[in-house]
Amino acid sequence: MSGRRDKHDADSRGRTEPTLGDIDHLDAPRAPASDGLPQVSVEPRRHHATTPPTVHESRRGWLVPLLLLLVIGIGATLWLKRDNLRNMVPQTDFNDLLGRAQQALQSGHLDGQDGTSARELYQSAIAQEPDNDRARNGLRQVGQAELAQADAALQAGRYDQAAQQAGVARELLGGGSDVDRLDQQIATTRAAQVQTTDLVDQAQQALAAGKLDGPQGAGALYRRVLQADSGNAVAAHGVDQVGDALAAQARKALDANDNAGADADIDQLAALQPNNGALPGLRATQAEHHKQQSGALDDALKQGMDALRAGHVAGDGSDTALTHFKAALAIDPDNARARDGLGMVAQALTVQADAAIDAGDAGQASGLLDQAALLAPKSAEIAAARARLSGVAKQPASQASAPAENQPDDSAPTAAPAVLSPQQSAALAQMVKRAQIAASHGAIMLPPGDSAYDLYRSVLAIDSNNEAALQGLHALPAMVMQKFNESIGGGNLIQADDMLENLSELSPGDANQATLSNRLASAWLDQAEKQLTDNDRFGAMHSLDRARKLAPANPRVQDLSARLQGAR
Image 1 (cartoon, rainbow, N blue to C red):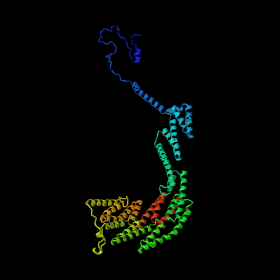
Image 2 (image 1 turned 180 degrees about the horizontal axis):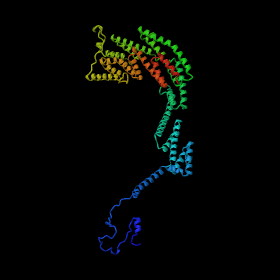
Image 3 (image 1 turned 45 degrees about the vertical axis):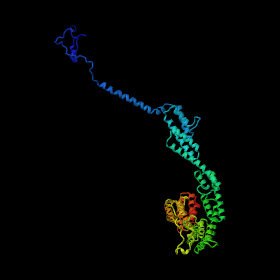
């Protein structure tokens, strides 16, 4: 190749061929003159210069991270879909294992030790592939099935099986509220089963002791067992035994003309066994006895009131108020009118004793108070009269034997004031205060020694003229009626019953007694109605019995008794 340019090429291509020039003078100083080539200035090379990227290089810079993200995404997708991908790969043995596990689950073969149960097969599959969703879900289904079977076993009374399967369910499900609930039910049921066994033992002991009625009687205990376990054969047989015993007891009471006892036994039998075959005959005999004795009872009560008005209170002979009222109680021991009659006899004897004290006849007064105390040993009037008699007896002999003409007209013997030391007076004042507090708290007659009644009497035994104690003793009946009204208003019928009994003791024959008895009887009947509505037949029977003792002639008593007999 020569250093000349081809003019034709230069013209046609529009470019100039480079030439080497004069290589012989390279080392010589460059002449300023032109050598025919374009002037090019060469700058010194800079090692730290930055070359801007080309377009292609820029594209390659963001493409690499994009590819990296794409690879990561594909990897994550493959990981999440590993079970689906795995299922796409033929796994004949593993799939067969899962199939057999599912079949065992559907057939109810949940657990075992021969390798064929659903639990064992699913656990074997998980051992091969710990992350396999089908195997894990299958094992969870086994746990749920165990839980369902445990619940069914509990309902069927198979408590040990229920507890065992509940334990397996807890292992497979890892606990949970359903498992906790079932465990609690099993524990509660087992406790009730133990209680049922105890109740059977208690009922058998009560039956052997002849204790048939009441909340702790054999009948009530056997019924409680049957409510908890309706299929308990021992309790069912026990109810039959109690029914037979009550029927025999009722017949014996009717033969002895004990209507009250017979009524209670028949009501107990009707509540325990409404379909007992002995009931119709007992009811018929009961009605006949009531009809026969009703006339005799009314006659005795009428004769007693007539004798009382005539002043034939007590003493020898058969035509006294005391004799007739006792005859009425022999016919009906719980008859309220007969008890009130005896209270009125005690009041009349106390009035006679006061008259004897006024006449200075301490011996006659003491005898009359003794008779009255037999009928009403807790009477406040009798207690006050005894205190008065005791004070008169302590008078000096000279004063007691003084001629009547030396005493003022219209004056009765009075007790000499007790001579007390300041310490004794303070002690008596404190005792009176204790009695007042006891009365305000309802401790009227009980507890012995610390009741208001006993404290007032203790004061009067020392100072028969103690005005505070006498007033407190006389005020006790009114306070009892106040407590009675409060108890009725608050629904505390047991306390109201106690207050009514206190009133009959403190003030026998009180005119308010009949009214209060009817009020309390109505309250007991209301409670019996509610208990019967709530299917508490034993409670209703108990309340009815309370009402019958207070007001046997109340029409609601007979109506509720008939309903109780027909209750199922």
